[in-house]
Each structure stands twice: as structure tokens, then as C-alpha cells.
Image: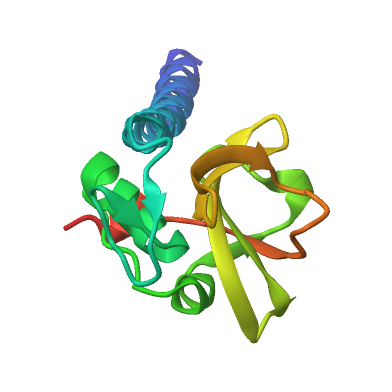
Length: 159
């Protein structure tokens, strides 16, 4: 009987250990993601008011995809594709109900005709570079047609 109790106790310790490691891994991954957003958002905020110039990639002027590429490069050491369409094509898409801070928001006529990108910052808002320069604005503003949302994997794309 003592042998059975020892085996059960050892098995319970293994289960508790696996559960503890699993929980700490999940917490660490979530914290890293939040940390990446804070860093990228800090870079983005520092460029509010910068001019919009088609084809510009910063640091004093940007087009939309030049801006998202710049803030991810500086804030998370992650290289994004150069154009909004290429960024849309590369990353895993999420639904609007599952969007998180730091996700990219894409606009255009269709999934094959992406013409604009911004970064979601929470509360239904994004930060983007457009004809008024780098601004914060509503994702669902009447002048934009949201086509999709995507999550940048900073761990995979880190330089």
C-alpha cells in the first residue's frame, strides 16, 4: 500500500509541475506581447503629427505602410513587408471581435486590393499615417472601409 501511495504522490507532483510550467509559460508569452505593444506604441506616439509623404519610411515623414514598418522595426525589432498589401498577405488574420492592441488594421476595396494600414491601439482606435499626417482616429471612420485585421508575430519576425 505504501508503494501505491508513493507512486500516486509522485504522479501528483509531476502533474502539478507540468501545470505550473504551463501557466508560467502562458503568462510570460502574454507579458512579452504586451511589452512589445507598449514599445511599438511609444514609438508610434512619438511621431504623431509627422507628415504624410507617399513612399516615405520615416523618421520625419511616412506613408501608411512605411509608418507601420518603422514603428515595428524601432519598437519591436521586427521587419514588416514594405506595402500594406504585403503586410496583409503575410500575417495571421483575426476577426474584429478578437483584435488586440498592436494588431494591424487593413483598408481597401477587398482582400486583394488593400490600400491602407494602421495599428490598433484599443478602444476602437488606431494610429496611422494618412493625408493628415500621423494621427489617432477611429478604425471604423466613415472614410475607411475595413477589410481585415492581422496579428504581427514579433517573436518570429524579430531581426
